[in-house]
Image (cartoon, rainbow, N blue to C red):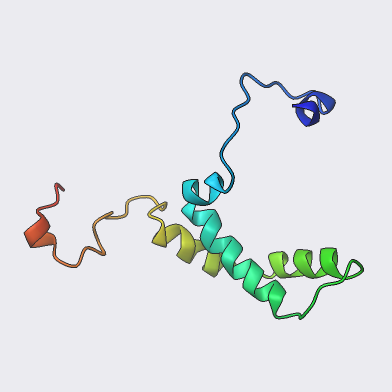
Length: 96
């Protein structure tokens, strides 16, 4: 709350989430952060001297094609059939 007040942000309500709840709420973030963390880990042990630079460099190297693929996988692109990956649409009788 203090951080919002320091930046003169307007906060209507502040809700606390359980630990690691965000991981369950945002599948797109999970996929992107997983890729990012894997790329950072390839640099070997991070030090206080190189940590910020390595993390920023790897974040900036994430391609737009990879981001688009994650959006597609999460069903967040427009005009997409949400049942396109269903293994047996006839048996499940999805409403279209």
